[in-house]
Image (cartoon, rainbow over all chains, first blue to last red; front, side):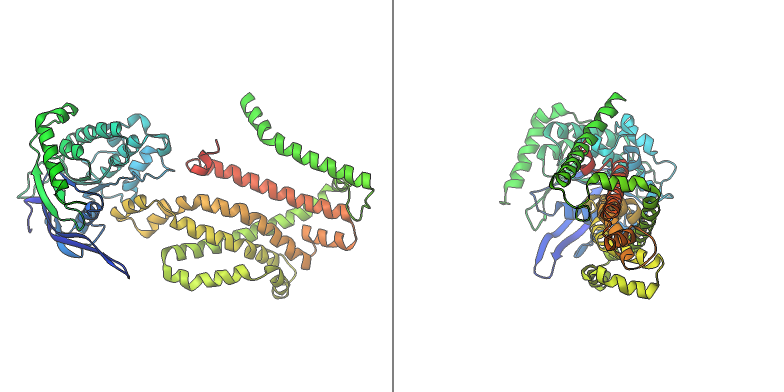
Length: 274
Length: 259
């Protein structure tokens, strides 16, 4: 076991998109550690490689250089154990399936993977506030509700790592800020997977979340730690620990410490023109 | 109940009135100009011919429909199998698509007599011609359909390590359904045309034969009645396809926006 102190470790990741005519460097030399149960947000200007980073962590993309370890192994291992949940900006629900059937989809892909402690699709709908909508079709739901379904779907295997790629990016501002606290509620309600392996806490309080956004208030409100990426090619410019008490509330967004963090992040994002 | 009646009237009344108007004009025109029946028969004569012996048309129409349907199934199955292979690999697409183009550009009407020589006077050559007619539109639509999947849904299923088989059944096939229905609305009438064309050349039954013989005998009422039965069959098939589509694709924009 290489390094199980951290849930996710990135070692000098570089990624180059190559086609026949040109090469585009999306990420250079990204190093990052995510502690178990941490809510970590990656923030950066558009096109800085945030989504690429998330896809590499999730094992959907192989980095050109560098290494990713999740729980001391390659991402593919976690993927195989169904220990990663993905939420994308587009909820990408299957329109011909009801809400419940969409949440059940992962279990249809792999019947064996859900262990007994994992919540059932019905419980997940309860958790995400969708219990009354189980027989609705996606087109009958608002954008925020659709994204709740996508979150419930990502939790189907009770993964200990949740990767979220601007999940609220397409929502209107009011829904968006409400969804932040919804997500935090869901996050604190659904614990991490129990595990007795040495070096790891036996029962982690939360799932580890890696969240990508370009909204400063969203990053502060949600996170334990915010990582700022530079414009393309993206690299880690700074990491800030957000020491606001939990549970976080919407009212905190108007307090001095919150606004200080916002200033700090805004300056970090401004340093080099995008 | 009242509501359904009203919406039924709203949907059926306008086209029915148009049709009746056109038929009345046709009837009036033929009577007024005193056009010979062997040139253009009045609709009344055509209807009279049909009512005279509806079983005759039912018998021949039944055969044509049977050949067209089997041809459609055959052509669509081949098209679907090919589309699945091509949607999954660019190499197969490059290898097979030119062949499909050849089938498309070949004047099938010209090939029909050859098929008759090859396969005899039975139903086989008619089914084959109908299959050839319906093959290409289904192929092109299915190929597009199998590829037109929501990229997010595809990525999500890939993150779950879904097998190509699961991707096909859970994502690609349902995503392609709107395209497949669009194709069927074109290919079913085409298959009917294919069957009729094949019947022209040979055979002892089918509306194609009826038209051929009536034409040779200058029996225009029979000819027009056969054409009318064909048109009516085509319309009925389209209505049935439309109703099935509405039930199956309730989730798709094309259905939702017409409500």
